Image (cartoon, rainbow, N blue to C red; front, side, top):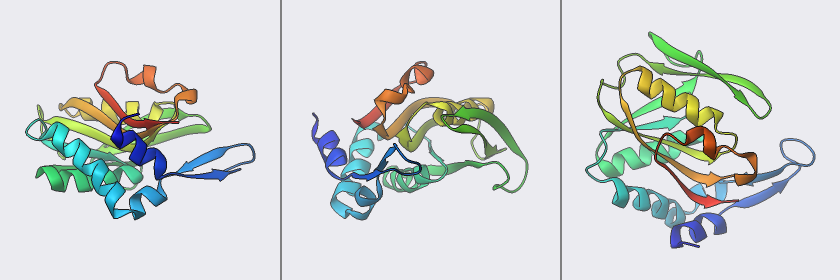
Length: 174
């Protein structure tokens, strides 16, 4: 296990029977609350991507936490991809299936310039639908998905194959 994987894994809290009976929820709250662990995640991605990216795209909602901090560390812009109806102005939307239903994500038209290299960030990779929808939105506005950064991959839910066309880095696997 890499050092960053050990930090992430050691900073998670297991919450049994959340959000429903039989589910073991992996809570990243303790990771975000620990300034050393949180800084290690941001520094890991900063070191890997300095000079390679022009914008960080954070997925609603915990991707905002990691994405905004990373954008600050890299000196790039930050663009949120939000749930439908949460962004003002003209948006582009994409619907997708989740392990428990469906949802729609949106990005503001003009938030990313055509040709910009974007790094898409989120906290957890489950079935891959959310990250795939975000990447498709980035491409639809004319930008390039230069990579995807995920803090924790839930390997048993099989999301990785949906993201095979992009450079995917998950910091830890459960």
